[in-house]
Image (cartoon, rainbow, N blue to C red; front, top):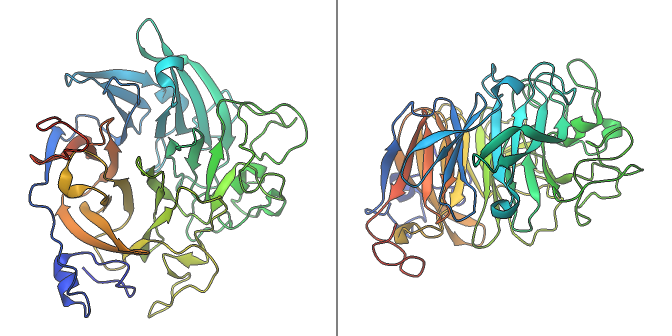
Length: 438
């Protein structure tokens, strides 16, 4: 694999590290006790895009499939459909469909969970085909399954093209729902969504949609699902025409009251595909898919006040966009990525973000685990100093690495080709789990 010019930030393999001047101290090896074991074989969950837990003490896992079905896996290993909304969405294009699932922090008591999907035809919210829909659903107490008739649409966001929908949703440590939005698609952000904050300044030519929610594209959003917004004047871009909304905006969001969308937490993203919160520190790790040359991971500390700009489309990774040859560091003022790797001329094509490991395997503690969709390679990244990381290649598992997932104990899973794998070891973290526990 070709090394990036900013070698101090990203060393991909032990062999590469050994060839880099001044890298002799990078002597760490992939833990020999770590294995990736199959839990469900390829094809078990066709079109699987993610795996999450409910945080309710049940130890259940939930697999979301792109076509619109969520499956629940019980501790015994049995699984069955949990919710089917396939008739409400479109998944014909490769980046559309059911893309995100998150359970309310108090799900055990209120039975509320949330999904992100792309609208099909004749959607009851009047969303156009392919637009992003963020909805709340409830548990049917008689069946303990999701009730498809309980849908409450929180917001819809226009999409200019069928790709770059982002789709991941997660509750932060603060209890608010974060929503990762891609730049609306096309090549190179032709509608200039990622850097446009003011809905009055959105591009409307050609395929660029004339709708204020377009200013939410290329952003990370943060909303309060426990509140609503009454009619009146505000700067909510996804509100109803009278200003009301089925959600509220936290008062400490960085653009409340500004000439921008109040829902926005950060900007400058291209297509954040799988991002996560560190369950120990609350830090936010955002994997953002690049255009043609660089993949990146942005690291946002838990105490960040919001408003970070991650650079797209002025920059791709830490370099200029459009690209120069040789690559030149981007001078645009923005938050540089913590990790990046090349895709031009490589087997890699698109980053799949993972998690900072906080589970039972002692040798993986603190490593950020991520991979690439096309090559299937998986890396472990350890922080070795301020803004510096050492990355080592774990394995090459093949095409279609869609997602990573955590269970309630912090065990880490890989979702690929409709199958599920789990990282396992005989050596556990004694401070977290009893010896010999799962």
